[in-house]
Amino acid sequence: MRIIISFDDTDSLEGMCTTYLGAKVVWALMKRHRILDFPHLIRLNPNIPYKTRGNGAVVLYVSLSDSSDFEKVKNEVIAQVATLAMIQSEATHPGLLFIKGKPPKWMRQVAEKALAHVVTIKEVEQLLKKEKNVEYYKWKKGRGIVGACAAVGYSLLDYSRWTYELIGYRKPEMWGTKRQISRQSIINMDYKTMFTFTNYDYYNDVSLIDPHGKDPVLFGIRGTTPSYVTAVFRQLTFDEPLEMWMLYKTNQHTNIHYFNRTLRTNFSELKAFSQTILIGKVVKKFPEKKKGHLKFLISDMNGCHFPCLVYEPSKQFRWVIRQLIVGDYVKVGGAVKRTKEGELGLNVEFVEILSLAKSYEYHNPLCPHCGKRLKSLGHKKGFKCVKCRKKFFSLDKRITEIIRPLMEGYRYLVPQSALRHLSEYFDWNVWRLYRENTQVSEETTTIDAHAFLEKLLSSCVPNLHPKRSKIG
Ligand SMILES: [Zn+2]
Image 1 (tube, rainbow, N blue to C red):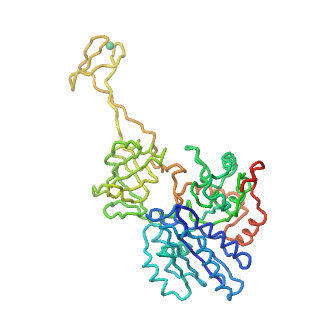
Image 2: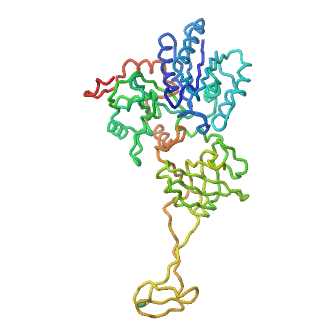
Image 3: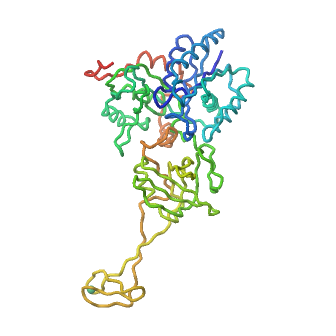
């Protein structure tokens, strides 16, 4: 019997990670049952206000060796969620689903909506109650059932991009302490590999594979195929032992949150927490705030203005925004949020320059005798040379066009350290070309996930730094 297990909202800012729970459940299930695909880690609308760090749900596709095992498996998973979820944390409201056979088709619509908008617990629960083959469990408000349904529905979307993430977990006694992972080993690994991404932000000199919170994650390596991320895992050197690791199939860095988002040339009906792309003309720039936050207004065709905001964590991206001037046409993508002042604004994640406005500089002409720049005697009153003491009445100001270092047609992104889980950074065209021109040994569609994971568990031993392997 095939079953789907899906859960969400089990972690909190104080600790835990839904993927850790997923890894525990997968390793336990694999002893007796067959895993049909790598566990899915699905990130949903990154803008909803009550999300934890990543807003990710986990889905497992399992073939039970005997259908009479269903109750036992179910009870084991419920017990795991009850033990490991941060139920004591105020903002954590776990939800868990078991689906026998195929998932209901409406979950696809829930996924579409959950990627860019807010879905309520009530609307999902009404649909779930009608399903005979679905059992759901809620802890506290049970908000997790929304993400759990959406994550299952994600696989039903006509969007075939997937990436993979190999996540290593720390031993419980290390949780909350500083992560012991060699920075040099991360940089070395990043230099050697091609089809993994967001490992290191060289602009800002920060490693991106290790998080900083109290959660059990030591690192996550993201890439295009299971083999690439596993190869990288073998190259890293750790200064603390791992408790376990798991390979997830994910929608991270695929730009899925912009999927089906029509370009907006009309700004009058934008809603908070939605993901959107706007096309408009820069009509006003505000002075830069002390903290380095930038703000500018763009206008749609009807003259409706909308504020665009670029905060300090966007780092070097702000350089692009500083170069923009009134009159430029831009395409801006990001999340619609309500600011502290109560107005709606777009948190800009990328800007594409559609056309640059012309801008000019005016200079006084040079003295025809000595070459020194002349002084103006007032509007249309001529010029005077302070050196030769001569006056010139027939000369005009010189006009030069200002060439700004921005490229029309180019999409500028925030640096990797400011990137969100779903935002694309990797150049998919390079990957496509590579696949077309070389024999990629691995087809991710035909790979046997169960066998791959078994091998990953049994034969992959992380390199521990010899001097520090006593930790833990
Ligand atoms: Zn002169």
